[in-house]
Length: 259
Image (tube, rainbow, N blue to C red; front, top):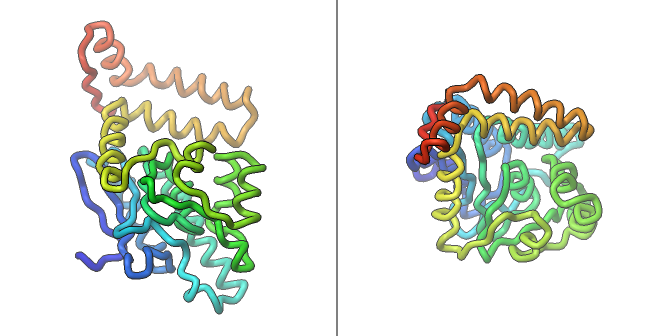
């Protein structure tokens, strides 16, 4: 369906999810957010999908929430809209598979928050990031105040949120917001190739690592390391651990089964 606001393309064992409202720079409204919820739920349950690449159709990743749709919201309606956006971001974080955001052009407001909810971001040289809500008399509502702070630290997050200023791909790379920068025409292909490499590893241990990194961020170091210890031990009950170590000793590529 070419006009579907969310499109999913399968490339081997990865799913490429594209926001597809290029006429409005892929801006987010309630319909888009509901579709994203159902899309991520479906991909979570799809055993044939090992990883997810999130990108945007056209020249823009996502220009943020639809301002026209938000302009006359009551506080109650705004709270419900914020909760829906946060539900989408938590659904993406809890999909149980590696997720990469491939950002070309603008990632603003809710689009920036969507990228932040992915495991990490790769960007094109044209990418621009911003949390411009302060310029509209509001604040980020889809988790941006929290995820941005956890990623780049309080001081940098405060500067970006307090000013609403935009930063380019190189600046984002230098502050650790973006992992890699590619030429625009190479972005999706390189992002997909990186994701396929990640998904060729042991999927059980990948899932375990993702869960421990996420959970450990919210507890003290000692307890987080205890969680790591227990997860490390559990890995030794899997076929993948035995295959991975046997393959290493036998000097051959591992053939992981996800068991």
